Each structure stands twice: as C-alpha cells, then as structure tokens.
Image (tube, rainbow, N blue to C red; front, top):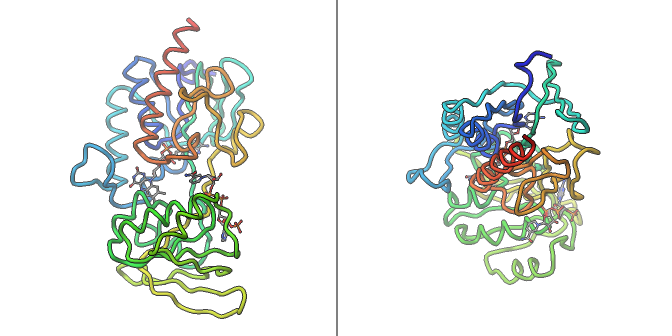
Length: 312
Ligand code: FAD
Ligand code: NAP
C-alpha cells in the first residue's frame, strides 16, 4: 500500500452528489479522491436538456453540465479516476476499498454517492428512444410534452404522482397497469382517479415503444384479459415501475430500507457506520433531483469534514 493510496476522503460515484462532495472537500483541503464508476457524470449524462437546475436560465445539456461539475471540483484539487469500486471493508479503520482493476485503497472517511437507476420494462424501443420521448422522470421531462398525449406505466405511488404531474402539460395521460387494482396508497389513487385528464388502461401491458427519427410516436399494447393487441399513438412514454438504488456493494454492511436505499440520520448524511456518509439518490427515495443530490453532496462533505476534525 503506497501513501498515494491512502485518502482522507474517498468519494464513490460521480453524479451531482459526488462532484459537489468533491468540490466542498477539496476546498476544505482534504485532498479528496473519487472513483467515477461506469457512468462518469451519473444519470444526467443520459438526458438532453436540464431546465430546472438553478443558474442555467436557458437550460443546459445534461452531459455538458456534468463536465462543468467535474471541472469545478478538479480545479480545487479533486482527484478523479475512471474506475469502479468493486469491494469495500468498512469494518476496520482506515476503511478499505478495492477498485475493479484490483487496486486497494484506504480512507479515513467515505462518501457514498452511487445514485439509483430507474427501472424499465426492457421492451423493444425503450432504450432506443430514451431521452427522445422515453423517460423515467416526469419532473425532468414533463415540460416537453405540452398538449400531447402520454402513457405512464405502473400502478404504484410513483406512477400516480408522475401521471398527475404530467397532466399539467399533457392533454391526456394513459396509466397502463398490469393488474386491475393499484398498489398506490389510497390518497394517491383517489387523486389520480379524480383527474379528468387521466385514463386507466387496466390489465394491460406495453410490449413495444414505437418511434421515428424525431422520437416516440406510440406504444404497442396487449390486453391481458382479451389477448387483443393494439397501437396507441402517444408522444411520450414514462416508466414509473420503481427505482433501484445502487447499493449492492453495501449489502450486509450498511443499513438499508426494504427497497435498498441507504439509511442516513436525517437531517444529516451519516450512515450506520461512523465515518461513512451517503448523499444523493442512493439515500433519497423521495426527491431524486440533481439539485437535491448536489445539496446532499454538500452536506456530506461538511459532515465528513467535521467528523474528521473530531477524530484528530
Ligand atoms: P447519479 O447521477 O445516479 O450518479 C451515480 C454515480 O455513481 C455514477 O457516476 C455511477 O457511475 C457511480 N457509481 C455507481 N456504482 C458505483 C461503484 N460501485 N463505484 C464507483 N462509482 C459508482 N434531475 C433533475 O434535477 N433535472 C432533470 O432534468 C433530470 N433529468 C433526468 C433525466 C433522466 C433520463 C434521468 C434518468 C434522471 C434525471 N434527473 C433529473 C434525475 C437526476 O439525474 C438524479 O436525481 C441525479 O443524477 C442523482 O445524482 P446522484 O449524484 O445521486 O447519482
Ligand atoms: P412500487 O410501489 O414498487 O410500485 C411499482 C409499480 O410498478 C407496481 O404497480 C407494479 O405492479 C408495477 N410494475 C413493477 N414491475 C413491473 C413490470 N415489469 N411490468 C409492469 N408493471 C410493473 O414502486 P413506486 O411506485 O416507485 O414506489 C416506491 C416506494 O416509494 C413506495 O413505498 C411508495 O409508497 C413510495 N413513494 C411515495 C410517494 C409519495 O408518497 N408521494 C411517491 C412515490 C413513491 P404490481 O402492482 O402489479 O406489482
């Protein structure tokens, strides 16, 4: 183990949470180290316009914004490597972490910012039209569908919330659910059902997303009761069947909820292991926005800095 492989702060993940934690810990003279993982820049590199991140009045392309995040943090001394963390041992201090090429590191503190991944149905056309009519974030992309018809897939709270939100813009929202009863909480169901712009298609599944060179033009549906297939013309397809936090690395090590989100001692960012902090979508089942992830990244950096100071 060389001294270069020991860090005061090791940041896992390079989305808005990771880079903000990097910026703050770098400016606190903690010489942070970051492993970006397989998606440098995080989820926003998979989208086009980001119109709700403050400071960009004309909007900004997701990938471009994440390059700016990186530049700003690197300018103050964040060390970035384009590797994945494959294994961690958080039972000893300093903590031990291994990258995918086998390199071992030790760290006095760790900030986990590994994000979450929206679940998709994995049907033909879905990945092809991602960002061109296919989305998993109504707050992010709803605005682009003014006066158009959309589908939302799912029957949980997320689907109800997304569908309701989308009716602010869309002329009509079809909620497509595979069963005849919703999983969503009663209050969310009632709100969605009272919304004139929402139509439920029960016991129905989407089998394919259709598009042209401009984006989504419709979906292929299968009615599970009648076996009837039909084409539904829509301009957008929103997957709302849940998110999977990227926490496999920490199973049996850090405490998580039933879905796999890391537990933190809100309003702070401490996980169940002292010296290990979590920020962004990996610990946030509710807001899941770039700005909230960045905010938590800042909080985790400040928490780590204060904790390290207390150890000295
Ligand atoms: P992420 O951005 O998910 O980044 C996680 C990082 O962790 C990645 O860099 C990944 O490589 C890394 N990682 C994972 N596992 C490992 C590992 N084992 N080792 C090392 N690194 C690892 N939000 C908005 O506010 N506005 C929008 O317009 C908007 N549009 C969106 C469009 C799309 C298509 C999607 C999917 C999301 C959108 N969001 C938007 C949500 C936003 O992208 C997320 O809330 C935000 O990116 C969360 O940031 P994060 O830093 O927590 O994690
Ligand atoms: P969820 O409760 O797990 O619901 C997922 C929905 O997607 C279910 O209706 C499920 O169908 C459907 N689904 C899953 N896989 C599918 C597939 N392959 N094909 C078709 N449909 C599929 O997930 P969620 O709605 O994201 O909610 C997650 C948690 O966050 C919940 O605890 C929820 O209460 C909470 N949440 C709360 C709020 C709020 O209070 N404002 C908002 C959003 C989320 P089945 O019903 O048939 O399984």
